[in-house]
Image (cartoon, rainbow, N blue to C red):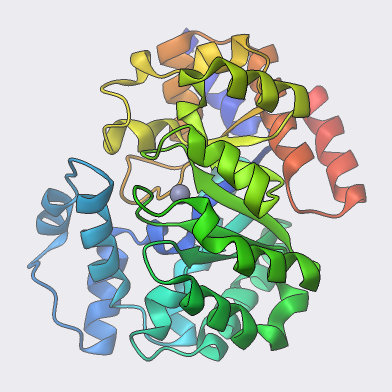
Length: 336
Ligand SMILES: [Zn+2]
């Protein structure tokens, strides 16, 4: 067994929690074609190779255009169930023990898919993952930030029958020009309901959006947050408060947030004492799941096992999971 293989198999065994995962972003080309056939949806792709060829992006917007088109094949609760369970199974094979699953209701409501359809499919897949391979999961209801805040508020009210099934609300999609302050009232409402709050900030948007998310949305963690490194005062604030940052290395390369992984600020973020976690974001589109992200970092940065244990423990500590589950996973990580 050579070094790379040994590292890969240890990384696969290391218990991992994923905090930044969009379930719609787990739609693999084959499943996109299968669901299109099942639902009689026309796609502009003849085969898997043609879909793969389309999965080339210059930036966040070019990705989002394809992402919303792909979503169109998801119609029934069985579709959402099959999509989620297929990802949970792949993640389980990657050594993922827990996932905080983000989903974008607005991407489906506008296509006439009801919240009932969505929740029925996702909650059944989550129950199946628990029963079949002991994976714990939670749900983050995410708002599309390029749509009006009033739309987000309406979705939040509409989701009332499922508040007990949601751990948190989130904020994603096109960041530039859609600052966190736009959603202050929605997040205040979510807080009053008792929901935790996360938000994408500092991916393509400026570092000021990270401070804005903390100040006006009262979030418990920041999704991405990599551009914090441009602002020393912000880095100090994030370090002192130990705000978890859900960093997505391969996503950042695919969307050209950085040119190549070796240029990524992750090592600088760790050196600054930031509370960093590793995640896959939209694994079907960005070159792989959790193990691919961990392995790519091992190759690019030469991190040792202690660093990976720290990153995994950071994620477990920040995850939406019961305390007894957290204690068990932290012990497993320490002993891995
Ligand atoms: Zn994301």
